[in-house]
Amino acid sequence: MKAITITRPDDWHLHIRDGAMLQTVLPASAQVFGRAIIMPNLRPPVATTAQAERYRAAILSCLPQDSRFKPLMTAYLTDTTDPDDLQRGHESGVLTAVKLYPAHATTNSDHGVSDLKKVYPVLERMQAIGLPLLVHGEVTDPTIDIFDREKIFLERVLSGLLRDFPALKIVLEHATTQEAVDFVAAHAGDGRLAATITAHHLHINRNAIFTGGIRPHFYCLPIAKRETHRLALIKAATSGAAYYFLGTDSAPHPQAAKESGCGCAGIYTAPLAMPLYATIFAQAGKLDNLEKFASRNGPQFYGLAPNTDTITLRQTAQPTPPLACVGAEAVTPFFSPIPVDWEVVH
Ligand code: NCD
Ligand code: ZN
Image (tube, rainbow, N blue to C red):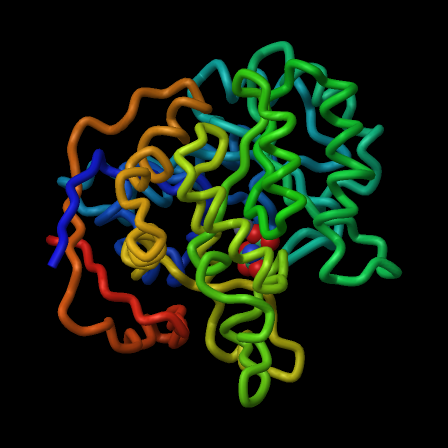
């Protein structure tokens, strides 16, 4: 049985919601990760520095006294975002990044940006002050096939952003295609573009969503793609390249909202996040690169120091069985079709 000790990882893309759901899901992430980029797609969205400050206080108040977990806050970019407010948030240390959801691209994105040109003055300011832009990289044109929306986003939107804002730091969140990881490798430059890769996109391809019936707990956005894309993501994540790093996109929803006639997008991976990644890295023979992906590349991109403590992962004799649902609303944790035989040593 193998074991590996790495610098404590960070999660560079996490949904922890608010209220009772926040209390239910926060511990799983806070026990393992040092920091997490907290997604702002609450209802209403976390769109201003004041809202981000309040949300951060709510998160901190749910942590045990001795927790060192640090939530890194983001603001939700809207058509009416005020550049001065973002700058104040950045300078006061409240805001780590700004999130771009194209309007109606995914869960709780109806306040998203309707036309990028409207936020060009905001992007100018972010470029000037060094505040990163995190993008949900899918076009929302309903005539584009759902499996092509990320690829088309690279051509129609991301290329233009890189051209018009040559010094803006951008993260293409939850990359799901060969085209996306190739695009990032080609344009990463010296740290201006990077991508996060989720654990679930390393574990499932689109067949999983329809195996033996319709599987709402494998439905997320961007939707899982063909097997060739999953293999490309594994190659990218395990490569050790500085421009790919860990972002779970763990996105809990109440069971009733997932298992419904119109189930919402989002996969809840937080309780098994590091075991899911370690299983894939071990199978690829690339455990040596897990620390770069999980603990080094992210801080380097954001200009932060890596965490100073460590975690240990070890291989288990038996694969992990399905985890019990959590909370009063019975949030169902992700259960991989690939046996997960790694665990965090607590
Ligand atoms: C996320 C959510 O539920 O908030 N859902 C998802 O499928 N990933 C939103 C998002 O990150 O797109
Ligand atoms: Zn997300």
